Image 1: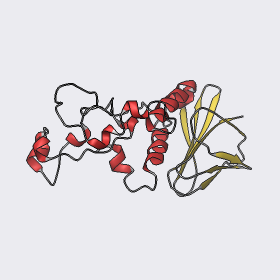
Image 2: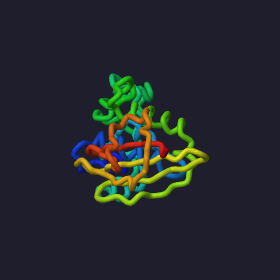
Image 3: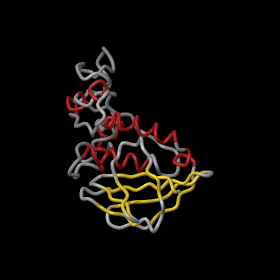
Image 4: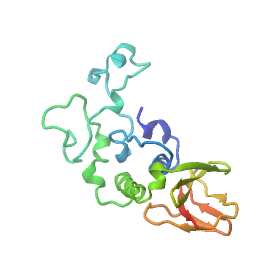
Length: 206
């Protein structure tokens, strides 16, 4: 099942939640894998039985609908019935909801999932610590996650609020310089980081 349907379905702001968990993924140690359509925030496609191609889904329908719901074509053009994927009928149908999330619809919209992924991947490339650095977790409460990434002389604190309510993380006396370019608006106070719902913050340790 697609990430948007598996993790964000019960959240107050699904788009904001998808942005913060993707930023968390791209800040953790290890290689980043982005499944096609995740950068658009696509949810699981609801397909009819006659549309299925996956043998598992056909065999175990409706208890298990198979893998086809997350394997529908990439949507490039919202005005095209096939999403600009093909002029011929594709292997699986393109859901109408996905057309409203197509690349050309999101392109240039700074608040869209697509532009968020582009912005954050560029931010990650600017800071090698996020891709290659060691990781040390900072104790935090509730729905928050915080850690440092270290590579060479660079040490970055990454803080995330996975909940819909504002939260605060104790910095333990660290002196930090906020980093720009990631698209989130968390703030540092005296000895703490303040995060809005589904917020994040990044700063370099002085």
